[in-house]
Length: 130
Image (cartoon, rainbow, N blue to C red):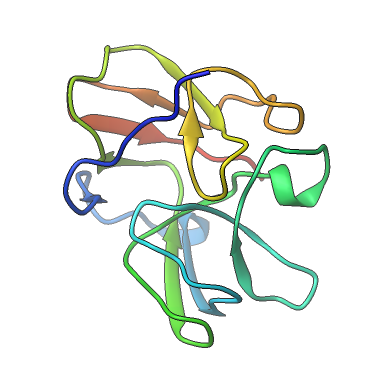
């Protein structure tokens, strides 16, 4: 298991996504940081995904565009490239990690679907899962 460390503040690296690949109008159900992997909770808030168990909490559907405190609006993206880490190995697959909001190089109990791959040493392509 190797959690991927964020380098600086993760940010959008690809052209602005269109249509269903942008999530707006959701409130953060907990503190969320830029680059956190998230899912939509039953109460329609955005929460950090974690792969500690199979189920909705392990779905890595969105990557947070910026920081948000509880109750603040948060934007999520999928099918985008993101400035994310440092010294990443191109082509490496990433899964929802057992640590909330994080990506891991190894599948977790619930995070069994590849949600991102590294493009180069600093960027990932986040596809997410529907």
